[in-house]
Image 1 (tube, rainbow, N blue to C red):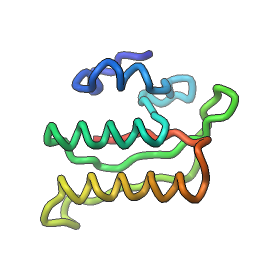
Image 2 (cartoon, one colour):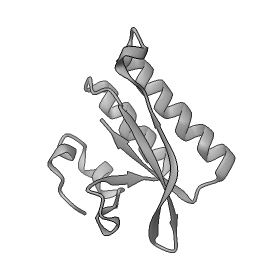
Image 3 (cartoon, helix red, strand yellow):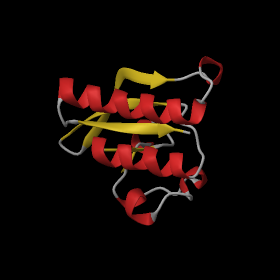
Image 4 (cartoon, rainbow, N blue to C red):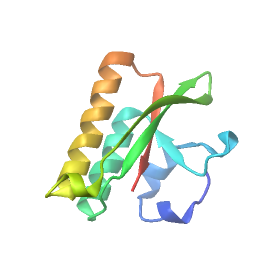
Length: 109
């Protein structure tokens, strides 16, 4: 697992469940849907807003980019922290319901 310093705030068990995206040239970590939601809830509890995220396929131990992502502009909401959490969880839950479990999600905060 890579040790990108922005992820130091996350618990070790969440980091260990992540998928390193460096082979794609992306200095990020992505997680399966349930763990990504746990990441979002943890960040929310620490006061970090979720700026957005990206979706990757994950088949045969290989991640590939998709054109799917979400974001929320801070000026779009009076309660950005809560709104960013809710939008991120809703997006991941909806994407999983429509497309299945073969995807992983990075979270930008």
